[in-house]
Length: 112
Image (spheres, rainbow, N blue to C red):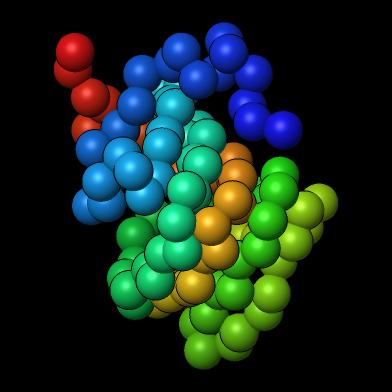
């Protein structure tokens, strides 16, 4: 089941993947950024680091390597990435996740 229409109607963010690969919807506060991701195609997420991130898998599957440890996360699983810890991953097509970033300006909101 896709995210509800009212979530899909939220603004998106600028990510380094085209919209036919990943779709986004965002809620931003002064303290954090909440992003609803829908992956339409398989995605290889290159190694990178940033502020703390917490996420939960709504549907699909992600293999994440966080600080050198690899795990597989499926619907109902959550993950936590501490600030500054390098991480990478493989995200399968059809996966939907909700990620919360401690950096409210982690991504730029798209302007229509």
